[in-house]
Image (cartoon, rainbow, N blue to C red; front, side, top):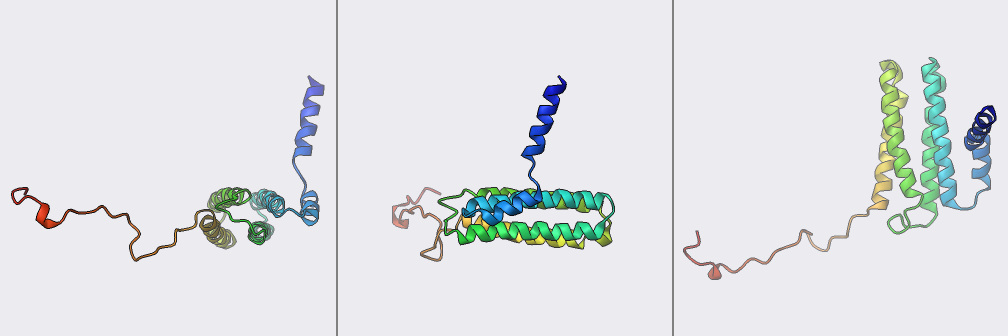
Length: 169
């Protein structure tokens, strides 16, 4: 039983990547989608570090880590934009970024509820930036159809007034 616990603990430790490993892989990776996914993992790591810093009362360190979180997610978005892929046709990476943005905003909102009102500015700023970035990602994933006229709603043909029986009303 003890051996099984040690094996499981070792595999969990290996599964969790360090910041240095992620940064090294981001630098060496040539596939922009994989780079973007690694940036998302780095952002999640920064968010966990920020939560720990805020819970320990290290507000300045937490704010710095929240800034690093935002920068990692912006880098992820930049890699996907520069990849030349159309998100609506090849959504890999874009979907993951959308999900990460949504989850991170929720986590920042939850974290903001535990932080003093006077220390929330970096969290609120990060939420706004990530919301704006998510809007851009969603716009790429679900582009609006180009309108050819002023009204794009489907029209049902109406019978001419002369065909409506006079006693119908």
